[in-house]
Amino acid sequence: MTLAHWVFQAIARAPRHTSVSVGAMRIFVPGRDYVLSLVDDPVGAALTMRSWFQFTLSVLVAATTASCCGGWLASYDLEASDLVGTWSADYEVSFGRRCWYRMTGVETLTLRADGTYQQLYDDGRGYVYVSPWNRWRLEEEEDRGASILHLEGGRFYPLGKEWAEALAERSWQYHSDDDGRGQPLDLDGTEVILHVRSRSGQRCLEYPPVCDLDAPVIVNFRLVASPA
Image (cartoon, rainbow, N blue to C red; front, side, top):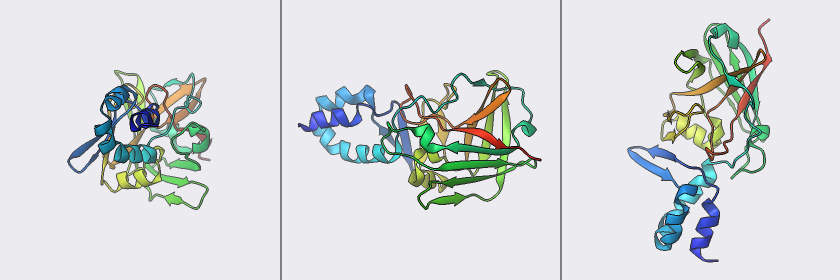
């Protein structure tokens, strides 16, 4: 197999329009839209593909549509008290099996009425992260009829454990062309966001999509405990 064919097969399912920043340097992660240009230049591919592909394997996941809150609509005109309680997300269910790497475990968000929250992620294999009680707030976007949950100091684990930690330490930045509502997303480690969705009186929280934006992986949370 030639290097050009290996390059084509290796990134044929990689995401579109994803990049990261390390310091002042922006690193573009190639995807399907750029496969042909790499195949046409196998020498350039040989020089660049190794580092790009290693990064892709570490950060990106393959597509699955089973993860999102299918049929759920953006929720608007909420009170912060509507979100108070404990929310849980199962990463193995959200990611499925068609991934560059598998994410397992459960993430729990406990939102208090006093505006503080705690994030807990347990991958089920010995890695456990428990945050301090940080601040959370609800943003209402009237022009879009949407509600956005902001978690100050939150970690974005859909990127993988290592990259979530590096982002929290602000040693790099994450960019995507779609934050889940058709807007660019830039994360610098100061906070993470979740979209509030609703259907038939029930609600779920969704992280921004990762992986291929045409068939994204979306980690979603369901309410598992309400305050007494």
